[in-house]
Image 1 (tube, protein in one colour):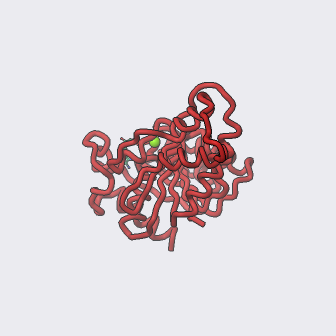
Image 2 (tube, protein in one colour; image 1 turned 45 degrees about the vertical axis):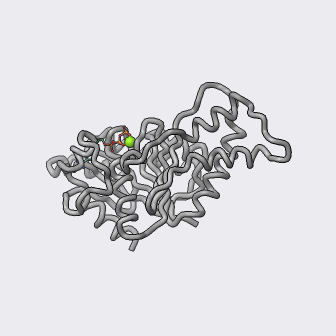
Image 3 (cartoon, protein in one colour; image 1 turned 90 degrees about the vertical axis):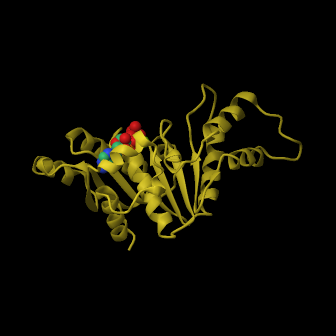
Length: 251
Ligand SMILES: Nc1ncnc2c1ncn2[C@@H]1O[C@H](COP(=O)(O)OP(=O)(O)OP(=O)(O)O)[C@@H](O)[C@H]1O
Ligand SMILES: [Mg+2]
């Protein structure tokens, strides 16, 4: 079974950046194959790797619900959908991606969502690691598209609001009964001057470990310059932290 890493936290805190650095870490160390799951409707995990997204899981499910396709005789709905879902897997070197996209309009998605869960389970079993970039609401996790999480990375800035969001996500997962083996908090764009004021908030979240990634000019520019994450150098401050963090978390 794949080792599943889920990245979650308040909007804009650096979830996609951290998730892409994790994929980069795994691929550059040959810990492949890796499946990147882009589970935020507005997210761009796959794009951070210079891949073009043309169709999402949401598009496939939307067509299935709206168009009620003519399924060829002898083919089950499940295998019909599986063929179409497979066509959205973006293949790369050592890493593939799927993009969840957004739900398309009204209609009952209960049945396709069950099929989606089966598809994701089956697909994930072909990979050594699955890295999932989530939206703050954790919709795909709360719809039970994810059975278990080996490592949850809660990303926050050093604001009380960011830390409260991390606490809330942690509570949602507990309430849903999603088994999470290991939880780490990543305080991104860390600034030492705020450490003391937030110490109690950090403690309340109840994670196994805390990592601090500093502001990194190189990362600040990747969105502006459209730099693919795989072409980053190892030495910049936040990249060094993520590498060291994973050396420790996966040892
Ligand atoms: N440690 C860092 N140093 C400098 N810039 C950073 C750092 N981490 C992230 N950034 C930049 O901050 C911006 C927001 O990061 P990112 O898109 O990863 O956040 P997000 O949590 O995924 O946002 P959203 O909730 O919109 O999906 C990006 O431009 C990214 O390059
Ligand atoms: Mg994002």
